[in-house]
Image 1 (cartoon, rainbow over the protein chains, first blue to last red):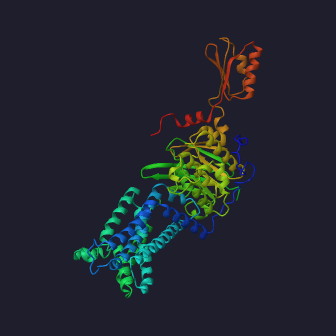
Image 2 (cartoon, each protein chain N blue to C red):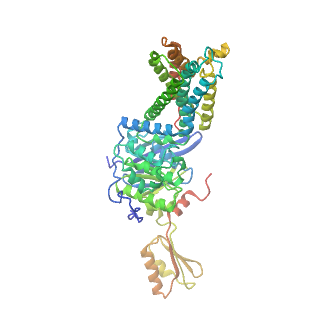
Image 3 (cartoon, helix red, strand yellow):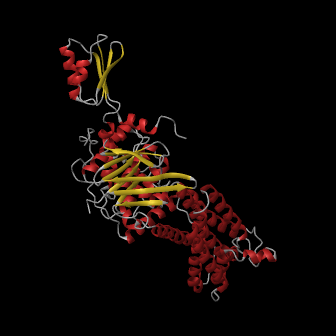
Length: 277
Length: 307
């Protein structure tokens, strides 16, 4: 009913002109694997570009490893040399970095994405909700691999000599732990306000850095407290990694069981309680 | 398939707690048309759109979009519709072009991204993170993201709110072209000129109900049109009155000022000037004023401010 647009198209802009049929409907979702790959690529780029997150997920664990391994601040049992201290610290720091990426970083980022309507907006695209979560999981796993390689390289440079036979069990522990951390992070991001998530996730990070068997050995805590701390997922992961990488013994069934319970419970709770808006 | 309505809403009710946002709304949108949904703040426009988009489950009534239930068949439907929300929706740290390219990748046959960005003036801010884009840039990006997947039907919630006049024209041009290319457009707006310019059909909503629906011209017809002129006081209006079409009238509210009421048409103006010529009257300051959509809107929804 209206005449053609009186405004001429901007100079140099080709095409999309009136009457070209450019916008003629041709709807359709991209194939599912392509959508998930695109979502994973975007989430990974954003995660690796985010300065504050890298501070938490890479810089703090790396510095903790370097500082506490080279300077004898902590009274570690039977650990007089840098290499011996690294032997205690490296598994804990690997666990801490996984926790920072999968729980703290993911909770904060997702909390703000929810607050800013990103999750809602993506809900109007062909990408299914589980595809969004798959993309986030993919980004966490890529980051986890990169940060683990970096931390392992630092630890090896400090003289760490882990048991190679413990690698498969360590990988299983890391994957199970990451599942539990991710689900806990999404549970927090999907239920609390973004500011509360920011504060809470950072607080939990600091508390567990100190009490999660990462740099302070669990034995230093009084008995009853130690029992409770031992049931936390970060403690279970750190302890399990230490056992398989230091002692190379049988799979740490206790740690695996604690992590499995956390993973199942947190995933179920997140699936029930997560609010997209 | 194509004879079916793009959107068919019957008896829609949506409540938030004790507030009833939509209260028995009926609305049908025909395919390949532009429909403007008008209404004061809080009238239920956004809730209605979000129900069509599959975000809200109706408390009562039915909503069919392209023949599908947006809640039940959300997955299949989402690939066929484009959505421009009222606020936000971008990853704060993602760059503008990154977001547009990402939206394109989620579709099977997307529009060429660089051309679309150029068309909406997004070329210069392509590398700017979303959180640093201006309000107008965010609006244009959201519009680009809504159409990039070549949807059959797009929902645009206040597409030109906060835009400068140039950007508004660009958006209007795009909406016209969408329509010309066969896309159905449903938009909300507070700009009456926008509805008059773009819409085939206008739906006015207030208190969660449809209170008027029709073409912009149809809604404006009759009502408050008027033609005024000044002349000698005390003219004999009987001959003019009998020459006027049915439904029109003429009076002299103040001496020397005449008012002809009824639908203003070229024929009405000719009748008045012919009468003036026959009676030796030189009409001074002759003005016509047509009833605008804004007049209709204010008559229907009142002039009080909304809470």
